[in-house]
Image (cartoon, rainbow, N blue to C red; front, side, top):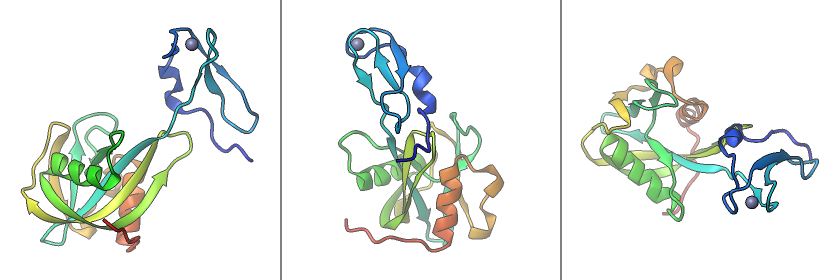
Length: 182
Ligand SMILES: [Zn+2]
């Protein structure tokens, strides 16, 4: 197996063993894998798992797409479709519908899976759905500066928050859809 990624960029955020409080150090345990955080006291290996996020590209009654401008880092001031981290035990589709409601005030029907995005050295795996607004009123929550609708030709490509925002919108506009069974 070829190792084409390194220890995750957030690894420096963890200094102590969650099991015994000992000091963690970086160790290469297997040549084919990234370095791991290993406790110098009890040898506990602190595996840093991916973090699952969902995003929802919502088409409104006017045929435009909903984007929110972020009021938090990372990506402060930049545009993203509604989304966020999935809670442990929460179905992906429930998270997508929940985040849409929380971040832009809309009730949505999921129409399909656009694609799943992951990037070398980055923790998030982003599952992006296509959806249609079926209720609610466009709004903004405390994580957003504003929410707006964009015609396909008006998408602010130069001011998108994340690689997955760019890639998800590109694939959505290319018509990429995978059927889902709800
Ligand atoms: Zn320990």
